[in-house]
Length: 151
Image (cartoon, rainbow, N blue to C red):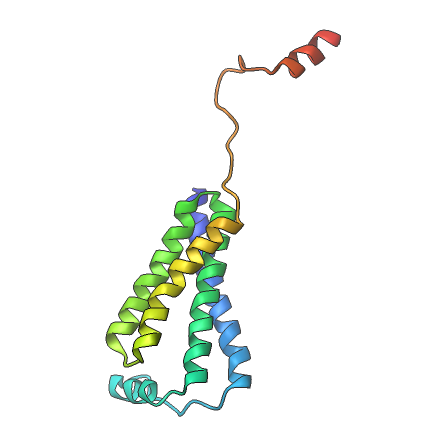
């Protein structure tokens, strides 16, 4: 259950982080031309006209989103597979984006590498959860037995 909650929280963290970076970035880079979201041709034309600073901002948004999402998933689930699941979902999204929309080759490579690097970093930063040993209590440590004997 913690794994599912971790992945869901990771996805929320991805979305929130990407929106925050985009919001801040929109104040720093020149305006992107208006786009008709109902027309794939309009979206492709807008993508083709983007400047390098906009591509870098987009890449930063994807990387930080994947990092925040993977870290949140691992923190809650306590397992690296939850972080890799979130990173994998972002990778799948970016693969579709790379295949559908025009972008420079360097951006295609960086977009596919970003969630993998973010997943690796998140797994290094957040420790794995250690579960207590399961058993019938027969594994009492010497300290616990000594404390019981003193009572």
